Each structure stands twice: as C-alpha cells, then as structure tokens.
Amino acid sequence: MTETRGLLAPETAAEVRERFEAVGTPAQTVTREIARAMEFPKEEYDERVTGEVVATARDALFASLLRVEVGDREEFADAKRDYPDAEVLENGSPDVDGVAWHYVPFADVLVATTFQNEPDAAVATLRRIAFGKFYRDVL
Image (cartoon, rainbow, N blue to C red; front, top):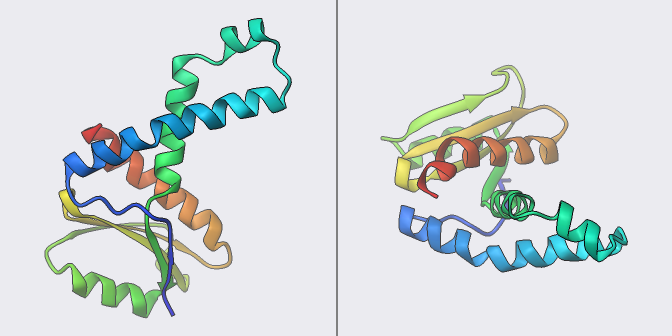
C-alpha cells in the first residue's frame, strides 16, 4: 500500500515561491535554536550564522516537506498512468522492489528513486533531486 510522506505539493511556480517564503521564518528559528543548543556566544553566532547558513536551512526545510509517495513497482506503474504525459525521471536500479516518487506539476515531471531496504534514504535522496533539478529553478 502506498505511503504518503510530507506536506508540500505546490501546483504552480507561484505557489512554490509562496510556500518557500513561508518556511523562511521557521528556518531562521531552527538555525537560531541549534546555535543556542551548541552554546555559541553572540560573537561566534554573528560570525558563523550567516544569511547563507539560514538560506541553506530554508532550502533543506522546504525540500524535507515535499510530498512523496512510497510504494512498490506496481504502485509506481499506477502513478505513471495517473500522469500519462509527464516525463519520468527515475534514479536508481530497475532491479529493486521499492520506489519513492514525487510529481512536479509545474514541470509535468514524475521524479522517482528506487530502493530495496532503505525507504527513508530514498525519500531524502528524492527530495534533494527534486529540489535541485526543479524547485530551485523557480525560486
């Protein structure tokens, strides 16, 4: 049975940008709290927690929230039928049973990563691939 993970499935480039903006403050809060937990003194915080660090946290947070389906080959075949005109970008081995996939509506692409025993790793990999190849371009 297909398992859905994640929350974000923006339909348009404008919705991607809107959702990305919405994770900006949480990314900043998480970054600040991690620095506090690491007991950075103010000077070290100011030196090390740059805008680039917070931007990286925002990218990672957004990507980690993308909606991903996890299932077997048969379920992935059903998903491909749901998007008959979509380009399919499959990463990994065709000889394994598990597949994690994410549909990118504004690009009409179904991105997938295969796995045998590590669905969590496949989901994380898939999210990085989808973000890097499709979402980053519209941000």
